[in-house]
Length: 210
Image (cartoon, rainbow, N blue to C red; front, side, top):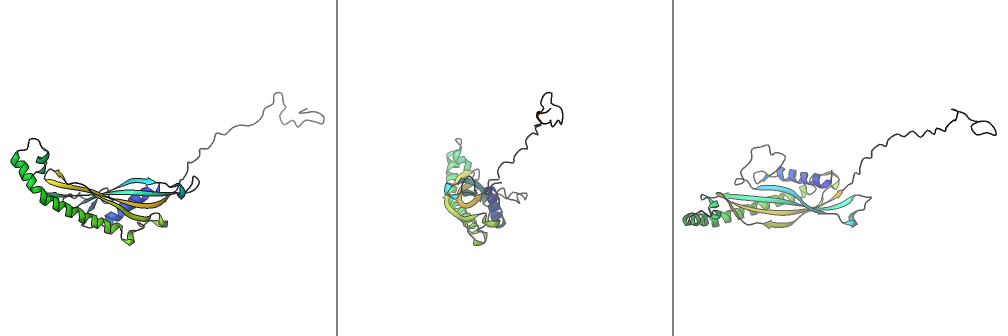
């Protein structure tokens, strides 16, 4: 198994082990617990985003350097007393739309603050020196860094306003190519049978096979 898959699992574990009551990790090892509503806890979900294999970091005959990027999506939501889906419903009346719009500014500020806090919590976990090697042996994960932060736009969903965003985490690792397991060849009989030759005939002087 390639190292980036092991690193992805380790990242999830570190995030989940340190989540506390700050956020919940989607696809974490303890997802058998009852699902927590996104309004109560921000969602964090991890993906392998991209990777590069610089030629200067290896060759066909050796281990390869892998500069990998992982995307951690952070999503928060806040509830409103007004059904915000009326904003995208063509059948909504003018009073309904006005009520929904009036509820938007406060919810936007709440979502914005909630997202900033969730990012703060995740950042503190990942950048903690104690988690820098993700508890992996032999420096499997090196130079972990948060390269980019991107916050999206608030989206009305039913009675909630949802704010998505993501961070990009870069990690350097080494990939080992295990190679293919060979298949045993078929056994061939290489005994030579010469026509009219007598078995085990060593021959005599001056003759060949006598």
